[in-house]
Every structure is written in C-alpha cells, then in structure tokens.
Image (tube, rainbow, N blue to C red; front, side):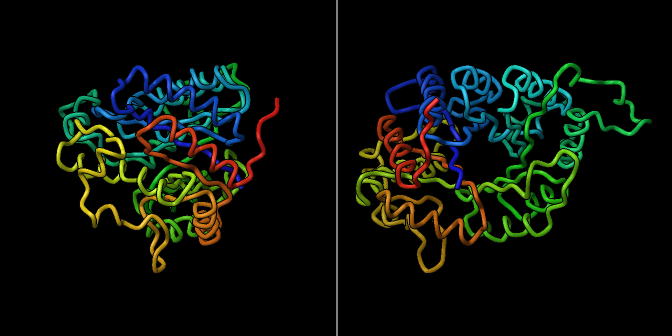
Length: 341
C-alpha cells in the first residue's frame, strides 16, 4: 500500500506563517526519507491558521528540496482560475521536475469575500462549470482541442516532454463519477464526508473509463485525517486540537488558529472529547487516532472496504514535533520501505 501526505502548512501555536511555510518544506523532506509516495499542498484563502495559499509555490520549493517523492496540489481550486494558466503553471513545474508533479484539481468556496476577490470578472455571476474547466486543462496539457476550436493554436506544452498526473479531489459521488468518466485518478476526502468514502471510491472503480491521458488505473486515494502517538490515550489527546479548531472556526470564522492540546482540553466539552476516533458501530470517524497498532487496524478496515491501494494522511496536530513523530510512527506501522538513495 502506498502512503502519502497532504500538507496544510499549519501555523503552530506561538509561531507565524513564515515558520509554517518552512515547516511545510521540511515535511516534504521527512516524508521522502520515510518512504511516503507523494506530498500534496492544500489551497486555503483568508485563513489565519494555515499558510498554504499558493500550492504551486510550495510544490516548486518542495520538489527542489527532494529527489524522489511526487509533489502536487491537494487541490488547486479550479473554480477560481483560468484553465490555461493552471496548465501553464503545472507544465512549468513538470519541466523543472519531470515525472514527479501531480495536478490535483478541486472546487470549493474560500468564503464569500475571498471568492469575490479571487475573481477577475466581478460583474457576472459565478457558474459551476468544473467539468468543462477540467476538460480544458486536459486539452491544453495534451493539445487535444478540436481543429475548429479557438484555442487550437495555443501550445503551452511545447518543448516539454512529460505531463503532470491529473487528479480530481472531492467528497461526493458526483466528483467520483466525473473522475471515472474522464479517466482521471480520484482522491476522496474522508475527513469531510466519511460516510460516502466507500460508495464513492467503489463507484469510481466500477465506472472508470480509460482515456489517452489516464494513468494506470483506476487510481484512487483514500484521504484520512489521522493522529498516531505512542499510546491510544496520547493520540486522543492530540486529536482534540482538530476538534477544537472546527468549533473555533464555527465561532470565529477564518480568524481561528489551531489550539494546543492543552487549550483544546479546556475548550471542549466532555462529549466533544469523547467523539469517536475509531470505527464505531460501522460508522467511520472524521478523524482516526491511536497507537500505531490501533491506526493500522483502522486503515486496514478502510482500505478493505474501499479497495484503495493508496492512503493520504492529513494530520492537524498542533505541536510540530508530535506531528513529525506521528508521521514516523505511521510509516513504521504500515511498514513503508524507507528511502535509501
């Protein structure tokens, strides 16, 4: 099983975004050393607690700081951008680091004001044309526009021999169907919608239609929020930071920072602290937490139910040292071969 990482550039308590960005690049080096398959950088706007606003910049820096690991976006929010520009950016990244770049595409709101600020045309109502945008990205990457299309004369891939892998990220059956129809890899965000993970990934596998640009497939990634510590008790304590952040965000909006485990312990109710972090009565949690043995057991159940051969870990742990330790313990628990070259 392949193990990968999605990095949010979390601002650790008492630090700032500058440190968070440096930590995000260090995460790529650690992930490579531990044998992780990929690291993807998220895109968040108008947030105090996360520094990854421009994943393409972090991708370039992380790719230069590593040798083997695949590096990509998790995800570029395509609804805010020109498909042509995104194709140009990721072709340039691919030219700099051939064979290692992933273009993960998603759609999401960044908040009403941020959505408006990101738009060039603020007089025309926004439309949901995500699938059409993806098709345009693919046509730019592979120069596959019809002969009579106005963009046929454009060739952003000129002189670039390889192409980034294109993935769709989502948390619903709709995005799974879209990825399958387009012959693209699909990554499901279990930490958003755990109840839909298995149906969506099984649907993607069953209806996958290979295309000329398709990777060996049907490729799928199960994205999981996970905390691993030396004991179940310590992992649950560390997991409270994410639970408290969700509560803070609901109360404060984008001004919320990830709290320390001690702060979270003061803020959460007893019921919130007891939110399940393992599969309970067949229900998957928003976040799994436990010792290496516990987390390995949970992941094995999840991959068996979905057929996924790759997992991608999101780890909202406030203490950077504990976060790094969690990634190390997970690699050991899943017996990932370490990088030796």
